[in-house]
Image (tube, rainbow, N blue to C red):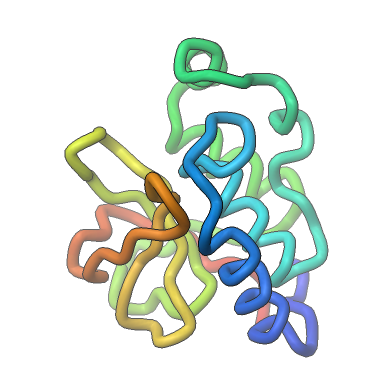
Length: 145
C-alpha cells in the first residue's frame, strides 16, 4: 500500500478549507470527487482517475454508478487499483483521512474521517457536512502512515 505524504495532515486540511465555501456540484464537489480530492491530498495519487470528468449532473453520475456496479464497488476498485487502501472490517480501527460509507437522507454516501478522528465529512450544499463516526457502515484505510 502506498504511503501517506509526510505532511499529509497539512495537505488534507488545505483541501478541506479549499472547498469549505464551494457549492455542491456533480462532477466537481460531490460525495465522491470531494473525498477523492482529499485522498489525493493525503497520498499524492488521484483515485478518481478514469472517473473524473465523466459525469456532470445527477443523471450522468447515476449512470456511471450503475454501469460500474455501485458506489461500494467503485470505491473498492479504485482504492485497490492505485494501491491506496484496503477494506477495514472493524469500523473502530478507522482513523483520520480514512474513507467510508454511511446513509443520509439522500441515500448511501461516501465520506472521509476528519482530522479530529471523531466525525466523517461529506460534501454538502456548501462545503462539508459533519456526521458522527457511529454512522459509518464500512470503510477503508487510506495509505500507510
